[in-house]
Image 1 (cartoon, rainbow, N blue to C red):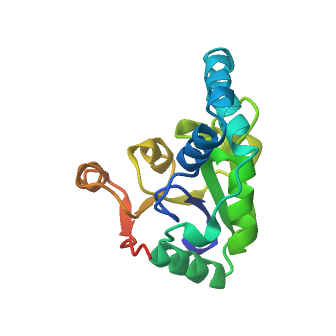
Image 2: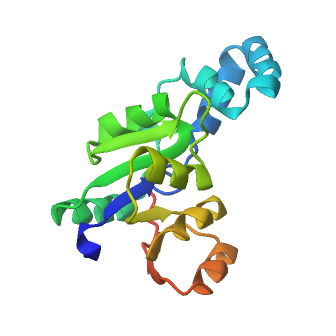
Length: 184
C-alpha cells in the first residue's frame, strides 16, 4: 500500500538550496526598488500571495545557477520508476514553480502560492486534502514549516534538515527516511 501513495516534494531548501521567492525579491529590489516599495506597501493590505505574485512576474528562474540536491532528485526518480505519482509543491509562487517543473520534467504536476493562497505549512495539507482530494500521501521537505504536513503522513521524509529539526523529527512515532543532501 505504501508503494502506491503519492509523493509531494517541497522545492526551496529541499530540491534546490535556494529559495525562489527570495531570489525574485532580490531581483525586483535590484531592477526596480521603487516598484518593490509599492508592492511592499500594498502587501500590507493584500498579503504574501500578492507580493509573491508581483515579484515573480518579471523573474526568470536562473536554472543553470541553482544548486540542486542530487540525492533528492535521485530519490524522486526512484519513486517515479516504481510508478508512483510525484507532485512538486512549494511556497514559492506558481509562476516560479512552473519554471522548475517544466525544466526538470520529474513531476506529474506542480503547485505553488497563487492568488490569495500561500502554499506553506498547514495550507499545503488543506490544498492536498480539500482541492486534490488526496488523503494518503508522503512528503519530502526540509524545514520546521513542514512539521504540520508530516503530521498527516505515515512517514517523515526529510533532507537538509537542521540539527534542531532532526531532534523534533526523531521524537515522532513515525517512520523516518533521511535523504542525505548532496547539493551541487
